[in-house]
Image (cartoon, rainbow, N blue to C red; front, side):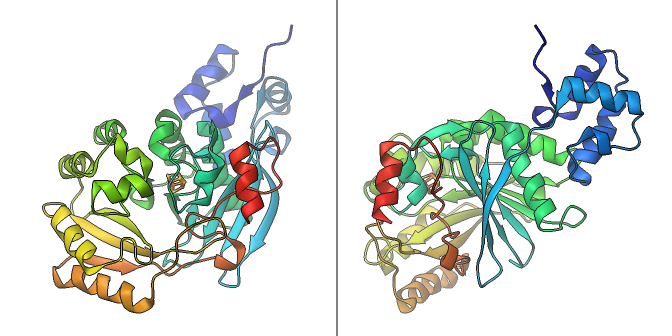
Length: 359
Ligand code: SF4
């Protein structure tokens, strides 16, 4: 029986070198393959012209480069582009390109759906269908970089699409190592931000990683009672434990932890909340990103007025906390934060169907 082909997309460079060597091929071809796949965006071995014809034929027999397939793309008036990508098993995910923020940014998914069930998030309503593999996570970057013409240009990556990255820890970190390879896209960890609800054991592991992305914590509330309603994992990992892990988190010079705070009208946007937030963040090199909710059918919260948002931001700024208010991008194509949910995909769960019906 013929053995399964080796999927180049799932391998870090040393693993690819080993896979080639095990099949009697020179290890240095791994670097060539990485350059073609990641820098040139090619997956057809036949087009890799610095490999001999015989080698290309052998590679076609024994190797594949699995790549998420673009199914559809929506373009927002503000330049944001939302891509629906189909994986080898027919599952679908979404990835978003956000231009000029001020850099070019790709918002990438780490899971199909999400198990965290945040109360203001459409993806959370899908439930978790499965984890993405490292190749599927890194593959989104390849697809978006090629589609946007950015293979040769710098861009940022935020792990803020579908899924909780620390709930799929190994695949996420492996994807970052693949993307970091100097023979591939060579993306610096300084250009990558991992956003988490605060899975404390994951934060502690991350603190020991040699390749460490920027960290963003989805905080969204200032008391455990309030946060447990909005971000259910808070029942297991309460605010005190998360913030303690943040205090211990090793930060590079001049870097800070970003605290994301989705503002919900009349729920978590009072001056008392702002003052509590100041106290919670004491002793942490922090910046706060306020995100007025993008209202959506099926989400039982409203967006606060600009005046409420400004007052909240002013209280933080007065206490010398760096604060920004996120301008919502791609609202007209539902590519904004917490609005990623795949429509028309196969194998929907009951929760997914409900979320779709509500939209
Ligand atoms: S906000 Fe993030 S962590 Fe929460 S349910 Fe949505 S995708 Fe998951």
